[in-house]
Length: 300
Image 1: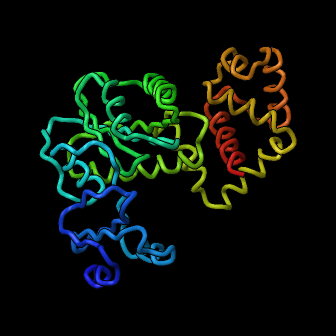
Image 2 (image 1 turned 60 degrees about the horizontal axis):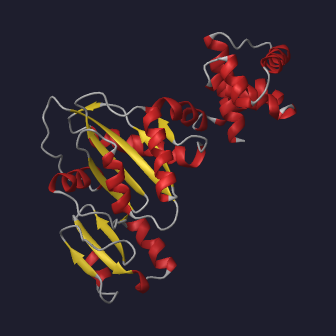
């Protein structure tokens, strides 16, 4: 089929190996069943033709970053193109740190060099396109923490005038399951980029409650909203207070500081919520229920 499509577009190229063109020159489509790539000059496709090809084939967005090493190439093909797994030690553990760069004039080569400089051990970096990449880290010792990655994001923003967000993956043993683990984490990160914009470092623990809330059946959502969301509709300031309080582990001093209010004002608002709903916040069950209500209210 790709051969027939190639004949329709002048200067298109069919290849059994991944092309090296960057995504600003060609649209590149991958046929998983035939293991072939078709590169079509962007000027040759109309918007409707592009949409049709995207339905039929996977579009591969090549980055103009530094050339891949042989190991990075193997990881790229394994994670993104259904290739075979790289040769790994059975005793190794890996985690994937995804990153997204928001801004214009991004130079992937400079960004990649800067990110690598923050890691004490060698890491592999592969790019999905010029704005999205993956750090592949083999865990040999304690690695960068969430707060350190947040500082890195701030540094990159200061140095390159772009906003960077990270998704910290979980630690997995070397196995063929690494691809499926990555694909699931990629789904979480895509969800976070659309729905969780208040932080530049995202982890499984941060995004999973919102992910579950978003995917609840509508009848369950309606029940939660009926029980608690009416309070937030009447007083949006109360919603903000409660959510910040829960996100800061019920720490009143820290919550008051983040909201720029006095502790007595915070306590007044907490008491007001408890009086209106009858739900206590200082035990696990109450906090969990109210946090779920906050997430659903946020969606609305």
